Image (cartoon, rainbow, N blue to C red; front, side):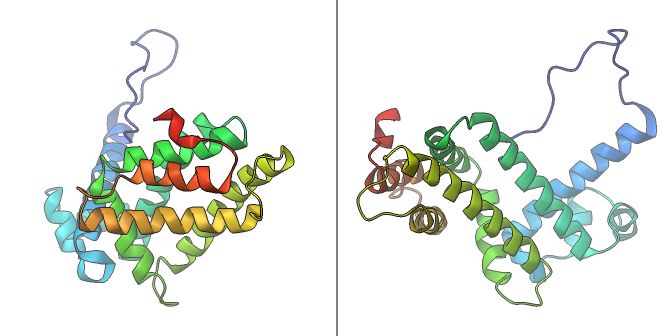
Length: 216
């Protein structure tokens, strides 16, 4: 999802525009983060190099290091930026437990338009199972927060009697995340045979008393 603002006020409208070196610095950092995403999505963290990132933005290694002190810092900034974009979108669509799960389906639909980001997380989440990987802690925190968010959505539905018999909020949350991760891997291998949002909607319908497939 793009974070570019299209609703900024005109000059003189009362809100000062960011200009000069501060705006240029922000644009440069954003370009470096986009380049890092492409490099790490294609090669993984260990194989992707700062030189590759610098080359994509037409900078020297020293120029990249001026904005991010090392490769690990760049990786952390890139992951945090991507997570902020997705979290903001899911929260925007969430009003209650049912809408939170619909937001996950919408996220899966959006991810089908961004194979480079899906590939990035598939590669890095596997690499980060190693305790000494620089993204290990990031993914520990990410999965903890995601499980909590999804579990709370199912707990809300459970309180309304909307979970299927024998299903608990905890098991449904773990199953949902496993389904999303597994679908992403299969979709990356052959996107012509896997429809991520449709499959996720079917799974959510099977663990609740709500037909999530009806939304299309």
